[in-house]
Length: 295
Image (cartoon, rainbow, N blue to C red; front, side, top):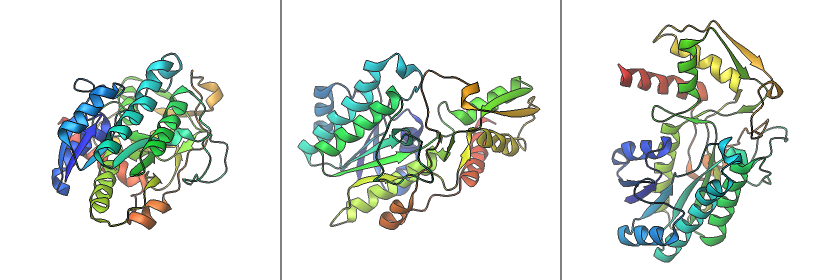
C-alpha cells in the first residue's frame, strides 16, 4: 500500500515514515518545504501526481498559545488545509486519515468523552481544528478523523523533552495539576494509523467516521511530569528536587485549555481491535528509545 503523509517532519509524521515499511507500506512524506496544504492547487497537483492508496494528514498548526495571535495562519493550516486534502482525495477516490485533537471538547464534562459528544472548543487552535474536522467530514465520505491527546515522542518538541530540559537546570518546577488528559506516544499513534490503514485497505465495507486514540488511563500535567522524572532518573541525574502542583489560575496562558479532555477509546477497539497501551508503559518505552538514541 502506498501512503502519502503530510506533515512528515512532525512527531507523528516522522514515526509514520520510520514505521511504514515494517507494516508493509510504502510511505511518502512531505512537509511545508514541499507542500503548503493551504494551497488548494498545490494539493490537487501533489495528490493527483502521486495517486496514493491513502493520505494521512499529520500536518497541523499546533502552537496553542501563539494561535491566539496568528488566527489566520491557524485556520489556513488546520481548517483550509484538511479541506483541500479532502477535496483532492474526493477527486482521486482516495481515503483520508486526518489527525485531530482532544482540545475540540470543552472540558466541562464529567467522565470521558466519546466521539458523539458535542464539540466546544475554547481557543483559536481548538476552533481551527474543530472546523478542520467538519470540513473533512463534509467533503469526503471515505475519511477517518482520529482525535488524540497530549502527544509526545522521541522526535520534535513536546512536554516530555521540555520537562527533561528544565529538570536539568532548575531545582524547583511548577506544573498545572487541575487539567486531566491522556498522554500519548507518537509511536503508538503511528502504529494505530498504520493498522487502520491496513484494515480499511482490506475491508469491503469500511466504518468511516470519527475515532479516539490515546493511551489508556489518565493523569494531570503534574502527574505526567512526576512520572517523567521517576522513569528518566534511571538514565540521568536531574537538578530538580521538587515538582510543585499549581492550579491553572496560577499559570495563566493566552489560550484556555479544557480542564478534562480524557477520551474514551472503546470505539476504536470495537471496530478495529486496537487497544492502546497504558500511558505509563508507553512513556517508559519512549524514554528507553530516547536515551538509547542520544547516547
